[in-house]
Length: 257
Image (cartoon, rainbow, N blue to C red; front, side, top):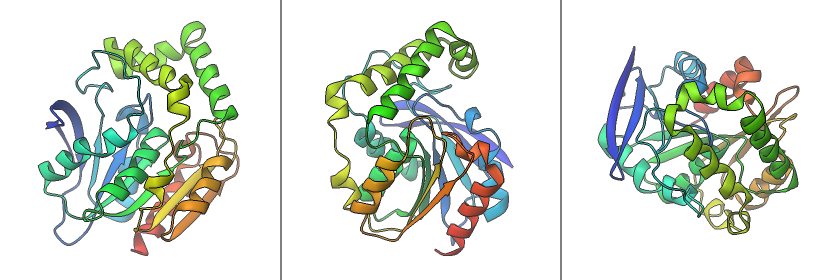
């Protein structure tokens, strides 16, 4: 059963979907989408994970995304620690969550790792799918391709149906930060070193944004149990390109907790 909510988190109105019932004696999976994504852009991946694990799933849209409260200005700073802080804590409190597995993709994959270091009393595990912690050359090239597709291709049309009139400020908020020297200089190492819960990272071997620098950083600095799955013939949306494989990885990971 799927329910839709709008909640207040960090003084912003955020859209949330809940799949299944929150269970007192089992963790809840909270999904964090990518940098220009929305709830619908997960497609049926959250439902498939719910069916495979039997756990309640909560999927939400961050400020500026989808049907959540739109952005009003560009943010010229790294928002990952901010998004991992008060908004998530307010979401946990709203639903009374005390045992959470975070499932994040790309930008959301980084937020999930940062949140694991900040909310140790709530976050019991993390599934981080292609986390973009480092802005390296291949990542910048992928962002430039996205910008070209947005301005001269059909990417804007594809994204508009998910974000509506708030799309332009959302897209350029993302692309401008990726291209800023200040953002590129940000270091997630301090957060990775504070993670104490088990982590599963999933990468697509053909990810156009690149994955090896982020995998190397994780192996070097995450002190807790780290499991890694690199999926061949899959790209940045590895959970869609190889959905059955990734759903099974998440299921098996949850069984180990």
